[in-house]
Image 1: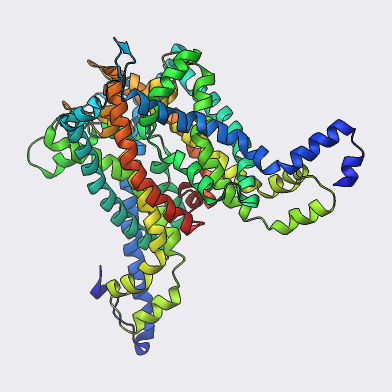
Image 2: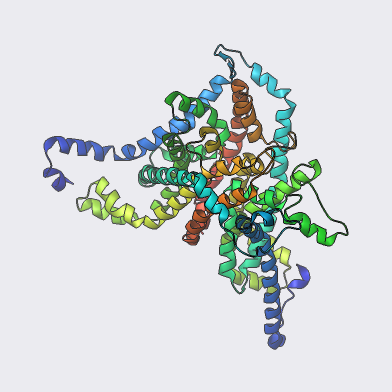
Length: 290
Length: 304
């Protein structure tokens, strides 16, 4: 796609420039369509697998367009109580997100405005995020056995708070630094305490950043697998763990896997649709302001 | 401040003065405590345990010296799992990078439905890796999956490749899933980076007759380099601890062929309950990782 693709356009051939540009645009569009198919077909396949009839799932050759949508398996998930995993995920991800946001935003304010602990503290905080879960999970497992927190909401919620805290602090530090410091200073000279300034000025002004960070924090907790695999048994299984339970040695429950995956993907899908503008900043830990 | 404090009773006044004076530490203290508990304590504990001799059967807390660390060197399964991890990292990361860059270049230009396309490309990156792995397990199923069917269209005889249980096919299958999920991540970051490149500079170079590659290396690359490095570091750290996708697709099989360092540590610690030995592995990983992380964080901090 190199040398011959971009010869210089002499000014004398100006009238022919437009059709050529149009032709190239059509080519780009076609390539983009192929790219879309590669990235979306698996999602489509997952979705149609969840609404296929039992016969269609095990049809050979595979059925690409199921005739009539069949939501039977979703009914089964509700009837058997498997949707509890979604409920568990929702509870754990929501509560841990709210707490992590409160603790993290306060800490981020301290880092952003006072440079508390210097650069080393900031770096230590974000380095906590880089540790692979498997490396720290065993002592936590023993600790939770001691406290009786295995397979409990409180255990997993606490862990996800800690797991997401570095991310929240790091992101919110950036968002707070974007707020001009003069607004707070004038509030402080007008007689606000630091706490009032935090509540009445910083939080409202950083609310888009807070919202975007909260959505990402929620998604991380929602999708997390290793901690949930090790620290839950049956009462508070989260949905990714339950998906892996459907892989049997003898039989694999494809329709259940697909249906639960679809249920578990919908919230994330809607969450992300709301914050496309913050996406790049969110996934690069604030390194790229997008 | 004095006006507000004057209306408060004396004790409250003192407390609020204290709260105001130590404000910066008060608001950060809860976070630091939580991180020390969940971040630092486990590492210290792992370090201690790795010098003891604890298994599920024997709660032997006497010191055993460095025997677990010595055993690491002769543990071929450990080094194989390291090898698998770095193999996946060495293949997946360049592919994600190049594909992401090409896609970003493509979507940078004018195109109908561009916004819709970019929005849809986000989906693979944000879904749970377990869901991604499960989806590709469906796709690669030897009988009921569409992959073999599609290959069958181009071949004269029916295709029934056992993607996830044949040693020669399992890595391509895992890599496809990995690349599928994380190329959009690279793409989104690089698209943001590329849109910061000055278009008029590129157009001027084009008129002067500079080749595509010359423009890329001389104009585009210097601008996107800091972002590129951060994207690579984030992905490298994620790939280093890869667990979910492989767990969903093969659970480390066939045999131990796709065990990564995370999966192997999990098996030693939670399937075979060799606590102290798993602790030694974990500590080795921490040391290896610290080197990368310190380097990475300096870059992220500089780029801010």
